[in-house]
Every structure is written in C-alpha cells, then in structure tokens.
Image (cartoon, rainbow, N blue to C red; front, side, top):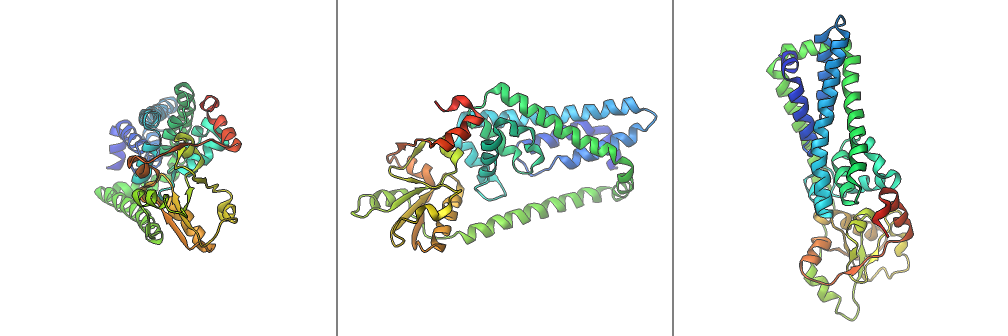
Length: 336
C-alpha cells in the first residue's frame, strides 16, 4: 500500500509535507524525501536510468519550491513584525522559549549564508528565516541563499533514498505488509516525540517557577529611595531588532554570565526582563544569580512588551562595538 501511495501521489505528498514543516509544524519532511527517493528508484528500475533520474529531480524541485513558499511567508512576517513574530514562534515551539538564541548566534557568525545549512539542523530552519527578515536582509540575498539551502537539502534527501533503495527495500516490504498499521505506527511515534519535547518544556517551566513583579509594581519600585537594579536579559539580536530598553537597565552579556555583576550588592533588589514567552530567559538569568548569592532577584512578568503595553517610558539602546560588528556581517546597512 505504501509503495503504491508514494508512486501515485508522491509529488503532492512531498509538496504538502515540506510546506507544513517549513510553516513550523512538527512533521519532519526528510523521512518523506528519503522514502520517495527509495520508491522512485525501485519503481523506475535500473533499465530506465534517465527516466528515474528525471523523476528524482522532479521530487527535489517540488520539495525546493514548497520550502521556498513557506520560507517566503515567514521572511515577510519577520520583516513586517520583527520581534513579535519571533516571540510567537517561541511560544509555539516545543523547545525552550529562548530558542531564537541559536539562530541568532549562527547569524552573528555566518550572516545570511547560514540559510544554506539551517534546513539540516532540526528546529533552526523555521526560526532562521524570520530572523533574516527581522534583521533587514534583502529579498534577493534571502532568495539566493535560501534557494541554495533548500535545493541542497532536498537533493541530499532524495539522493540518499535512491542510493540505499536496495538496502531499504526489505523494510519497505514489511511496511507494505503492515498496510494501515504503518500509518498508526508513524502517528504513535510522532505523538511520543511531541510528548517527550513538551514534557521537557513543562519540566523547565516548573524549575523556573519563582516570584515575579509586574510592570506596575516595577514602576512603583523605581520611585522608591533605593530602586532595584534592572537587567536587560535579551539576546543581542533581539536587542538589535528592538533597540530600546527600560530606562537605566544594564545589558546582560550572556557570554560573561553573572560575573559581570560582581560589583553589585548581593543583598540588593534586581528585576530581570526579556522578550520571550514565560520570561524564560529572564528566569534563567535570575536562577544563575541566585546560585551566586543574589537573594532578591525577580523576573518581570510579561517582559519588555508588558512594560511597553503599560505605557511606561523607554529609552534608546546603543549597540556596543561587538554587536555592531556581528550585525554588520548579517546586513551591513542595518546599522549606521
């Protein structure tokens, strides 16, 4: 049954699966590419080499086109809505809420060229695309590198399936014998995978449960004789996308960890904010600080967006030279 299904509807299935994955759904497309490469090779046979190769090329082209359709949507959303769309992706992600940081670090090192390889790294492909849009990467540069990356990814998947077709055929025969049982096994496997990831996320959120202050409380605390020290715990690229901060906030360098706070009174009050769902990045920094003896550390509930929505003051954030150089690698014109 599986063999006949792929042989007859392989291209539409590949297009749909790749599109859903590029839109952010947890439905990996690489297994479909591998399986389609296997079945296409077996159906074509060795006596019709050129016809088989042409069929494999069509599969790779369909996968590439589908990936570009989904990626263009996320690129536009990143360009249009910036940090808000990144926050939405993190809120929908099964991984921890500071998931954008990996994409940001790769962009800092390699710039837009990182799009050539992100599709080979689970979880980063969907995030890297809106980051490119938010960072002001030109549409031409985006299309060039994203198309190369999508084509390389699709070609590798289909080619590997074709190369190991004979080896995989016995397994394919078993799957054909199972019939609808194959779909049931696949569904159960996907459910188990999602369950494990959600459990990991829930465990992290439980670990980071701690008292928080809201925007109104923080505004009141700032009027006191000994106001709390405010720490901006956003990642560098998030600060670049949204170049403001709560007045007087200290920029937290994640590379230096809490050692940069050694000069502060450990008995003082600290409020840490980020711009990620559930204040995970802020809570992680607060957790680090507490292990170093800072007893009164509180994440800001709702982060920077809650402070902004409450109508409280913000001030411009100037980038340091290291951040300027990193951003310039990504988009030279984004920083004057």
